[in-house]
Amino acid sequence: MKITIEEQHSGEEEIIIRCNQVSDDIMRILSFVKAQKNAVVGYDKDKLYRLQAADIYYFEAVDNRVFIYCKKEMFESKQKLYEIENELISRDFFRVSKSVIVNLTKIEYVSPAFNGRFEATLLNGEKIIISRQYVPEFKKRLIGES
Amino acid sequence: MSLISFLKSMALNFLIILGGCFLAATIFCSIFASDVIFVLKDLWMIMLMAFTSSLTIFVYYSKREMSKKSTIYRKIIQFLMVIICIFGIGFANDWIDKRSIPQLVVMFLLVASIFSAISAYNYILNCKMADRINHALEKLRENNHDS
Image (cartoon, helix red, strand yellow):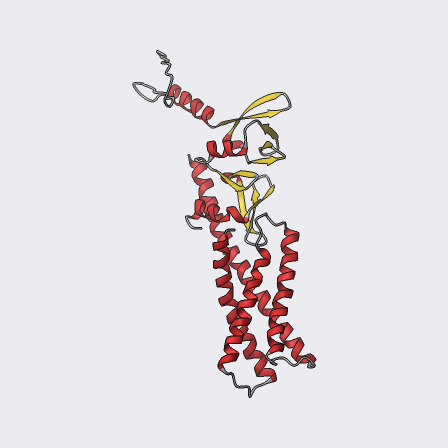
């Protein structure tokens, strides 16, 4: 297989695969590329981890630090919450309060909380609050009405 | 919540409370004054009662996110304010006899019942919305699993 890399100095980066047929090898390359695109960098003390977006339950900002919560593990992110939101908004992530971005596919169910808020129970049993301010957008995203 | 959403919510509450006021007035008069005749002023006063009661929703207006504790306190304050509005207008128009304990108790129970019914209605609406959201979440999870 011939590999060609062309450097460009502007515009969006692009990967083009020219093949006779989509073989298993090509599929493996594709899934690797996709996995890199969906990866989020998390730190645990001095160690750096590439986390798959699909494994992340939610992000939370606490005292100017952003934490990444997976099923059981917790990592720290060097990114700001709004940067993460901009990167992941097109996927299944959604901001549910000023300090939390949740992976919608990790919500087991929501239930009404006090005063127009909702409480989301995640698949790992954790509970997070969907703030009243974000409820209309949340409804719009999921059921198409606010 | 924006001020516009808040005012919309207040307008809806006004209509619900107005219905509650008419219901309470009908029950109260059936018990204590079955021969009463309503004049136009009374109807306006009932509207005023509903309007002042619906204004109490402003106890929830806050730019900051409220804690569960704070919401419960505000709910209690709102109930007390509704009681003051209803009894204030009731006393001012001589609809309620201040010296009659049965009248005071019945009116209090009516207000408490209607207040609870409206709170329950809002809760049921939110439960229905939660069901729809849960259904959408389930679909999202299924689609995600398939892909």
